[in-house]
Figure (tube, rainbow, N blue to C red):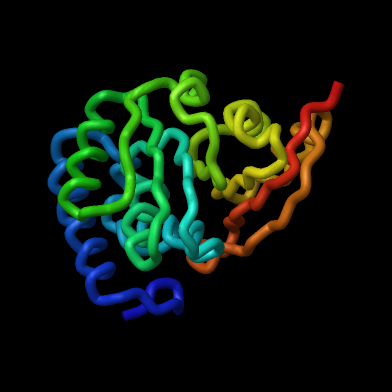
Length: 204
């Protein structure tokens, strides 16, 4: 079985299927994503989210900021079953969404835990990580501010999903930050990118 042209095990595919069923059930009660995109769950959300782990498919500690409906955090945690080790910390301050995320992790036996706290509080609870991820959360500059407590050491890399206007956000961020950047073209959405950011340092 394949996802974005890359093979996944039958067990992983079954976990993703189960997650999609859970997601659709919970969507009837709480707003997990924009209602107009629910019908495109697999392509718009699951496959798109899977690209992050597929860029670094090995055991690692991830922090997913503003996990919301589980994208990309839950998908990363499910795909992590393909490797030995690894863990995903999902940060979501909305209690209803956090409840959904906990159920999703438990029922898919994914490698992760939920922290129902504000992003600004997360560094007190999780001191280190290998990777940070975020999808449809905030501008690049604000994502840098959120991520900097982990990235300041130079050992953490971030992956941010961004749409067509990301260049304007990057230009603004360059006035306050120095960083290395790799732009990965999305395999799912033509105008989208996954920004791989490393060696983030505040200017001034």
